[in-house]
Image 1 (tube, rainbow, N blue to C red):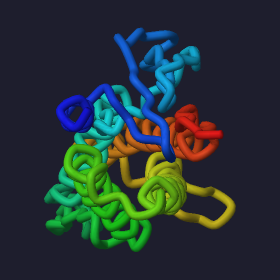
Image 2: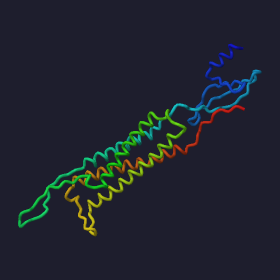
Image 3: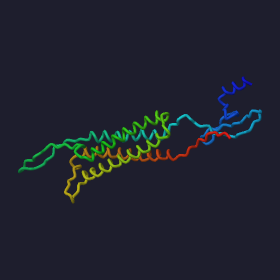
Image 4: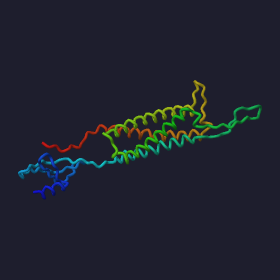
Length: 239
C-alpha cells in the first residue's frame, strides 16, 4: 500500500482531492482547449467516471497578429517622425524689383517654424516609443502580469497614444492645406508653389503618420477586445 501511494504521488496524472484520488488519462484538444478524461478512485477501490475536465494552459500565448501590427505601426510613425523632423528646404526668391533689377533673398522653410509640425513630430515620436515598448511587453511581459492589470494598462495607453497621434495629424493636415492653397479671406499666401520639395516631403510624412494612426486604431480595438474575452479556463472542482 505504501509503495502504491508513493507511486501515485510521483505520477503527474494523479491528483489529490480531499481523501480521494483523481486519476486523469490522455488529453484531447477541443476548440483550442485541452481536455483530459478523469476518473475518481475512492478508498474502497470503486471508480466513478468524472468525464472531461479542461486543462488550464499556463504557457503564455503570443498574439502574432497584434505583434505584427505593432511592428508596422512603429515603422510608420517612426518614418513620419524622421521625415518631418528632417524637412528643410532653402531657396533664393525674388522679393522685390527696383527698376529692372530684381532683389533676391535666400529663404529657408523648416518644420520647426510651425508649432503644428513640431507637435506632429512629438506625437509621432511618442507613438513610436510606445509601440517599441509594447513590442517588448508582448514578447517578454506575459510572465510578469500582475492580477490581469497588464492588459488593462496596455489598452489605456493604446487609446491615449492613438488620440495623441490623431491630434498631431489633424493639426499638421490643417497647416499643410493652408500652405498648399493659402487663404484668400485672411490674405495668407500659399508657399507650396515656391517650396515644392518641402511640401512633398511633409506630405509623405503625413501619409506615413495616417497609416500609423489607422494601425493604432485597429490595435486599440484588439486591446479592448482582449479585456472583454471571458475566461475560458474552468478549473476542476471537488464535491
